[in-house]
Image 1: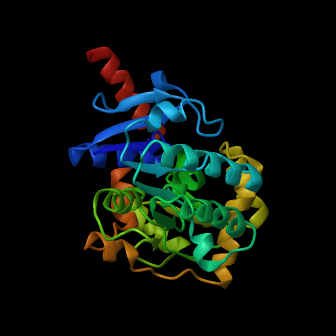
Image 2 (image 1 turned 90 degrees about the vertical axis):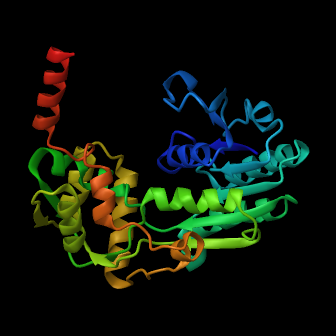
Amino acid sequence: MTILVTGATGRVGRVLVDRLLAAGQRVRALTRNPEEARLPDAAEVVPGSLTELTGAATALDGVDGVYYLSGALDPERATQQARAFMKLAAGAGARRIVDLSGLAVTVRRPGSYEMLRDVEEVIEASGLEWTHIRPGEFASNKLDMWGASIRAESTVRSAFPDALGVPVHEADIAEVAAAALLSDGHAGHAYSLSGPQRLTQREQAAAIAQGLGRPLNFEPLTYGQARAAYITAGMPWDIAEYLLGYQAEYAEEPPELLPDVERVLGRPGRTLAQWAADHASDLSDDRLRRAKHSASTVTG
């Protein structure tokens, strides 16, 4: 079986490539910058852009299944892109498609719901066997929100210390996608994914500390202070507002634990502590990382 993975260098797509290769599948990746993709040698890399559909026809030639990640942020463009891509996929003889959507569709969150659901409806009308993957909060968002302060100060700061969350490990998302691509019985399903634990922001900081094997401080912030901290760390202001908006919502309307990861994979999802252990190198002290780099340079 040949599987096309779009968004193959993303947090989910990169893990999915590894899982599919480990399962003995032929993997083709569509990426803008093949020379910077750093994908395994076993993966076939095709240059192109999903947004502009350059290279898409070549990438789809002879594939059996597709992992689809929309590259468009504008609702109208996202729908047009999906419609054009699905036409190419159906014409190329692809049989199965799994798309990365979002939990906003399940909970009908205004704004995000409309665009994501419109794309889902295009996929459902394609004639291919389809499965929607709808994750909630990505655990990997912690790298953007807290990574800089954890590395530099061993500190987590949050505007909503008691807001609950159920962050899901990107590896669990990728493995659900792999199951839907490689196994029968998933066509026509929409899987809503969460992590296995509902934790406050304070508890999430403690879980990350557990996974890293070192203590972390926790400091509550105001909304404005948190936004400024995110922007100072390099996050675009609109993304900072987006993430803080989710936290504010969770403080009043806590997200639910969802069963689909365990239902599909036959095991509980990975905990946030496991996620932190998996990302220990991304969250290690900047000084320690520099020291290790210097040592490797001297001895290498």
